[in-house]
Amino acid sequence: MPAQIGVTGLAVMGANLARNLARNGYTVALHNRSAARTDELLAKHGSEGDFIRTETLQELVDSLEKPRRVLIMVKAGAPVDSVVDQLVPLLDEGDIVIDAGNSHYEDTRRREAALAEKGLHFVGIGVSGGEEGALNGPSIMPGGSRESYDSLGPMLEKISAHVDGEPCCAWIGTDGAGHFVKMVHNGIEYADMQVIGEAYDLLRNGAGIEPAEQAEIFTEWNKGQLSSFLIEITAEVLAQVDAATGKPFVDVVVDAAAQKGTGRWTVQSALDLGSPVSGIAESVFARGISSQAEQRKEAQSLLAAGTSEVVLGENFVEDVRKALFASKLVSYAQGLDMLTSAAKEYGWDLKLDEIAGLWRGGCIIRAELLKDITAAYSAEDKPANLLFAPAFVEAIAEALPAWRRVVATAVQLGIPVPVFSSSLAYYDGLRRDRLPAALIQGLRDLFGAHTYQRVDRPGTFHTLWGEDRSEIEATDSH
Ligand code: 6PG
Image 1 (cartoon, rainbow, N blue to C red):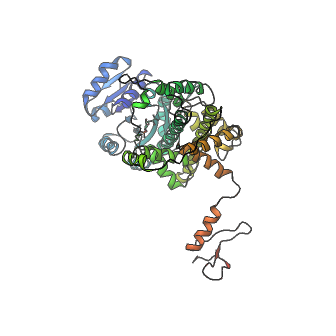
Image 2 (cartoon, helix red, strand yellow):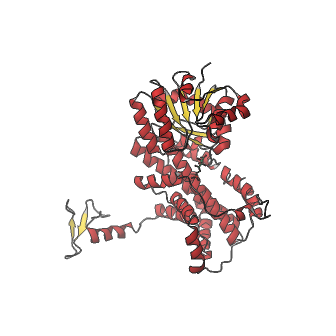
Image 3 (cartoon, rainbow, N blue to C red):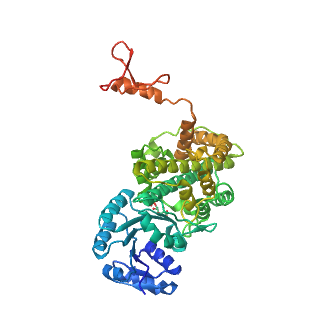
C-alpha cells in the first residue's frame, strides 16, 4: 500500500506530526537525513500506526500515492530551500510540497511561485501547539492554493485540535497567508507572555507576593475571563521549586528571554504595513532589554530609581488582573488589525472569524477569550477593530479604571510595564478626539515643506514659514 503522506525531518515536531497522522489512520512514509532518527521513531512508536521506512528522498517519493504529499519539517531558512531543491526534480505535476515549519511568509511566497511554475503546489502551513500539540492536535494554518487544500485539508483537519467538534484548521489564503497568520499568532504569543510577566513582576515586586502564592492566584484567574493555556502554565511554572536549591524555579532561571525570531518578524512586517502593533513590538523589545546583560549590570549601580512610596489599594491584585486582561485584549486587537492590513496588501481574503476560531484550541494563545473574538467577527456587523465589538467596548470600560491605576502605580514604583502602558496608550490614541499629530504636521511643514491638510476645507496647504507666514495651496514642488 502506498503512503498517503511522507514526512521528512524527524526532529521532535516532525516526528510528532508523523505520529499524529499515523494515529489518525494515515499511512505515513518517514524520512530523515540520518536514518538513525527514523529507526528511533519506529523502535519507540512504530506500533502506533502504519509507517513506511525510507532512507532517501527518492525512496520517500516512490512510496507515496499520487498526487504526492510531502511534508517538510526542518529548520526555517536555508534548510527548507535545500530540501525543496532536492525534492522538486523527483516530483510530478500536481504533487504537493508542504512546509510545516515557522518559515518567513516572504520565503513561502517565493517558494510557492517557483514551484507553481513547475506545476507543483507549495503549501506553507503554520502549526502551533508545541511538541504536545503536534502529537495530539495542533492548531493549523494552511496557505497555498485552494486546490491543494482540497487534497490536503481533510487530513490536516483530522489531525488538528477540535473545539466543540470543529477542527482548529481552515484554509487561510493563497501563497504565504498561512505562515503570515502563524507569524502574527506568535507576535500575539510574545505580547501575551509579556503581559503575564508584567503582572507577575507587579505582584512580586509591588505587592510582595511570592511565586508559590502567585501560582494560586494564576490558577484562580484561569477560572475566569483570563482562562487560557498561557495562564494555566504560568501557575505551573510559578509553583515549580528548584530541586537543587529549594528556591522558586523562577529565581534560578537567567532573566534573559530568548527568541527564534517570529515575534521580530511580526514587528518588521508591521512596520512595512504601517500597522501599529505597539504591544507586540514592546514585547519584542522587552526581550531585547532582558538580554542586554552587560548594560543592565552597569545600569543597576549607575541609574537612579527616583521612585515614590505607593500605598497599594486593597484591590491591587484584582486591578492587576483587569490590567492584564485589557492589555491582552489590545494585543489581540493589534494582531488582528495587522491581518486586515496584510489582507489588503497581499490580496488575501482573510476571514478573521475563522482565524480566531482555529486559535481557540491547540495553539499556544488558545484562550476562552477567543470564543468571544470569533463571535465578534462572525456577527453581521463586523467591527473595524476588535475593541469596537460591543462585548469588548463594555469589557474594557469595566477594566479601565483599574488599568489606569496599575500603570500609574507601576510608573511610581519603577516597575517596567511596557505592554500594559503601551496598550493603554494605543487605546487612548484611538479614542482621543485630537492627537498631537497636527503639531507634527506643522513641524514637518516648517522644516521640510511637507504640506498638510486643514480640518475646515479640502486641499493640501503649505505655510510660507520663512517669508510672511501666509498660507498657500500646495503645488507639486511643495
Ligand atoms: C507555537 C510556538 C512555536 C515556538 C515559537 C517560540 O505556536 O507552537 O509559537 O512556534 O514555540 O517559535 O518562539 P520564540 O523562540 O521566538 O519564543
